[in-house]
Length: 178
Image 1: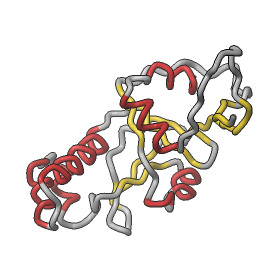
Image 2: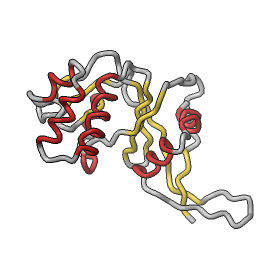
Image 3: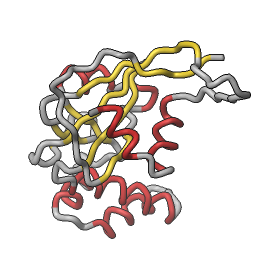
Image 4: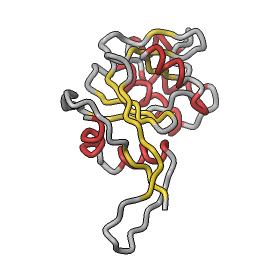
Protein backbone atom coordinates (compact mmCIF):
# COMPACT_ATOMS: atom_id res chain seq x y z
CA UNK A 1 0.00 0.00 0.00
CA UNK A 2 1.49 3.38 -1.03
CA UNK A 3 0.82 6.69 0.71
CA UNK A 4 2.41 10.12 0.72
CA UNK A 5 4.45 10.66 3.87
CA UNK A 6 6.32 13.73 4.93
CA UNK A 7 10.10 13.38 5.02
CA UNK A 8 11.45 13.77 8.53
CA UNK A 9 13.90 16.61 7.90
CA UNK A 10 12.70 20.03 9.08
CA UNK A 11 14.63 23.07 10.28
CA UNK A 12 14.44 23.20 14.07
CA UNK A 13 14.28 27.00 14.26
CA UNK A 14 11.31 27.48 11.91
CA UNK A 15 8.62 29.49 13.66
CA UNK A 16 4.90 28.80 13.55
CA UNK A 17 2.79 30.56 10.97
CA UNK A 18 -0.61 32.15 11.50
CA UNK A 19 -2.44 32.70 8.20
CA UNK A 20 -5.91 34.19 8.04
CA UNK A 21 -6.75 31.73 5.24
CA UNK A 22 -5.07 29.23 2.95
CA UNK A 23 -5.40 29.00 -0.84
CA UNK A 24 -4.17 26.42 -3.31
CA UNK A 25 -2.77 27.72 -6.59
CA UNK A 26 -1.78 25.71 -9.63
CA UNK A 27 1.29 27.20 -11.26
CA UNK A 28 0.16 27.09 -14.86
CA UNK A 29 -1.67 24.49 -16.91
CA UNK A 30 0.35 21.28 -16.63
CA UNK A 31 2.76 23.06 -14.26
CA UNK A 32 4.29 25.17 -17.03
CA UNK A 33 5.05 28.06 -14.61
CA UNK A 34 6.47 25.96 -11.77
CA UNK A 35 10.17 26.37 -12.55
CA UNK A 36 9.89 30.15 -13.09
CA UNK A 37 7.88 30.60 -9.90
CA UNK A 38 10.22 28.55 -7.72
CA UNK A 39 13.38 30.06 -9.21
CA UNK A 40 12.18 33.68 -8.97
CA UNK A 41 10.19 33.33 -5.72
CA UNK A 42 6.94 34.47 -7.31
CA UNK A 43 3.36 33.35 -7.82
CA UNK A 44 2.05 33.62 -11.34
CA UNK A 45 -1.66 34.07 -11.91
CA UNK A 46 -3.58 33.75 -15.16
CA UNK A 47 -7.17 34.46 -16.24
CA UNK A 48 -5.75 37.18 -18.49
CA UNK A 49 -5.50 39.43 -15.42
CA UNK A 50 -2.52 41.27 -16.89
CA UNK A 51 -4.17 42.08 -20.21
CA UNK A 52 -4.66 45.74 -21.17
CA UNK A 53 -8.44 45.29 -20.69
CA UNK A 54 -8.44 43.44 -17.35
CA UNK A 55 -5.43 44.74 -15.42
CA UNK A 56 -6.93 48.24 -14.93
CA UNK A 57 -10.21 46.71 -13.75
CA UNK A 58 -8.41 44.49 -11.24
CA UNK A 59 -6.13 47.28 -10.04
CA UNK A 60 -9.08 49.46 -8.99
CA UNK A 61 -11.35 46.67 -7.80
CA UNK A 62 -14.01 46.74 -10.52
CA UNK A 63 -14.95 43.10 -9.96
CA UNK A 64 -18.40 43.28 -11.57
CA UNK A 65 -16.85 44.66 -14.76
CA UNK A 66 -14.20 41.94 -14.61
CA UNK A 67 -16.95 39.33 -14.34
CA UNK A 68 -18.66 40.83 -17.37
CA UNK A 69 -15.40 40.64 -19.35
CA UNK A 70 -15.36 36.87 -18.81
CA UNK A 71 -19.03 36.63 -19.86
CA UNK A 72 -18.23 38.68 -22.99
CA UNK A 73 -15.64 36.08 -24.02
CA UNK A 74 -18.21 33.30 -23.74
CA UNK A 75 -18.00 32.10 -20.12
CA UNK A 76 -21.24 31.34 -18.31
CA UNK A 77 -22.13 33.63 -15.40
CA UNK A 78 -21.11 31.09 -12.72
CA UNK A 79 -17.68 30.47 -14.23
CA UNK A 80 -17.15 34.19 -14.83
CA UNK A 81 -18.01 34.94 -11.20
CA UNK A 82 -15.62 32.22 -9.95
CA UNK A 83 -12.79 33.56 -12.16
CA UNK A 84 -13.42 37.11 -10.90
CA UNK A 85 -13.50 35.96 -7.27
CA UNK A 86 -10.22 34.05 -7.65
CA UNK A 87 -8.66 37.12 -9.25
CA UNK A 88 -9.97 39.38 -6.47
CA UNK A 89 -8.47 37.15 -3.77
CA UNK A 90 -5.08 37.22 -5.51
CA UNK A 91 -5.09 40.99 -6.08
CA UNK A 92 -6.38 41.89 -2.62
CA UNK A 93 -4.17 39.56 -0.58
CA UNK A 94 -2.37 41.67 2.02
CA UNK A 95 0.15 38.96 2.83
CA UNK A 96 -2.05 37.14 5.35
CA UNK A 97 -3.01 34.25 3.05
CA UNK A 98 -0.98 31.04 3.01
CA UNK A 99 -0.54 30.03 -0.66
CA UNK A 100 0.25 26.38 -1.33
CA UNK A 101 1.05 24.34 -4.40
CA UNK A 102 2.61 20.98 -5.15
CA UNK A 103 5.60 20.55 -7.45
CA UNK A 104 6.54 16.90 -7.86
CA UNK A 105 6.83 15.53 -4.34
CA UNK A 106 7.23 18.96 -2.76
CA UNK A 107 4.61 20.93 -0.90
CA UNK A 108 5.57 24.53 -1.67
CA UNK A 109 4.15 27.35 0.39
CA UNK A 110 4.52 31.00 1.18
CA UNK A 111 2.94 34.37 1.81
CA UNK A 112 2.79 37.18 -0.75
CA UNK A 113 4.56 40.47 -0.18
CA UNK A 114 2.58 43.70 0.13
CA UNK A 115 3.66 44.73 -3.38
CA UNK A 116 0.69 44.42 -5.69
CA UNK A 117 0.46 42.30 -8.84
CA UNK A 118 2.63 43.17 -11.81
CA UNK A 119 1.69 42.35 -15.42
CA UNK A 120 3.57 39.45 -16.98
CA UNK A 121 4.35 39.59 -20.72
CA UNK A 122 2.08 36.58 -21.39
CA UNK A 123 -1.10 38.36 -20.22
CA UNK A 124 -1.09 37.07 -16.65
CA UNK A 125 0.26 38.73 -13.53
CA UNK A 126 2.76 37.84 -10.81
CA UNK A 127 3.49 38.70 -7.20
CA UNK A 128 6.54 38.07 -5.06
CA UNK A 129 6.53 35.45 -2.31
CA UNK A 130 7.98 36.87 0.93
CA UNK A 131 11.36 35.17 1.38
CA UNK A 132 10.71 32.88 -1.60
CA UNK A 133 8.86 29.57 -1.64
CA UNK A 134 9.37 27.27 1.35
CA UNK A 135 9.31 23.56 0.62
CA UNK A 136 8.40 20.41 2.47
CA UNK A 137 9.40 17.21 0.72
CA UNK A 138 7.00 14.28 0.61
CA UNK A 139 7.85 10.83 -0.68
CA UNK A 140 6.02 7.63 -1.45
CA UNK A 141 6.46 4.97 1.18
CA UNK A 142 4.76 2.22 3.08
CA UNK A 143 1.80 3.33 5.10
CA UNK A 144 2.06 2.98 8.85
CA UNK A 145 -1.07 1.39 10.28
CA UNK A 146 -2.22 0.31 13.69
CA UNK A 147 -2.74 -3.25 12.52
CA UNK A 148 -6.43 -2.85 11.80
CA UNK A 149 -7.98 -2.90 8.34
CA UNK A 150 -6.85 0.63 7.48
CA UNK A 151 -7.64 1.69 3.95
CA UNK A 152 -5.51 4.32 2.28
CA UNK A 153 -6.37 6.00 -0.98
CA UNK A 154 -3.52 7.67 -2.81
CA UNK A 155 -4.56 10.82 -4.62
CA UNK A 156 -2.76 13.39 -6.72
CA UNK A 157 -1.42 16.63 -5.24
CA UNK A 158 -4.07 18.87 -6.82
CA UNK A 159 -6.87 16.79 -5.30
CA UNK A 160 -5.05 16.60 -1.95
CA UNK A 161 -4.81 20.40 -1.80
CA UNK A 162 -8.47 20.73 -2.71
CA UNK A 163 -9.48 18.25 0.00
CA UNK A 164 -7.31 19.87 2.67
CA UNK A 165 -8.66 23.34 1.99
CA UNK A 166 -12.29 22.31 1.38
CA UNK A 167 -12.42 20.12 4.49
CA UNK A 168 -11.18 22.91 6.71
CA UNK A 169 -7.95 21.09 7.47
CA UNK A 170 -5.94 24.29 7.36
CA UNK A 171 -4.67 23.77 10.93
CA UNK A 172 -3.29 20.37 9.87
CA UNK A 173 -1.59 22.02 6.92
CA UNK A 174 -0.11 24.72 9.14
CA UNK A 175 1.35 22.08 11.46
CA UNK A 176 2.90 20.33 8.46
CA UNK A 177 4.70 23.45 7.21
CA UNK A 178 5.56 25.05 10.58
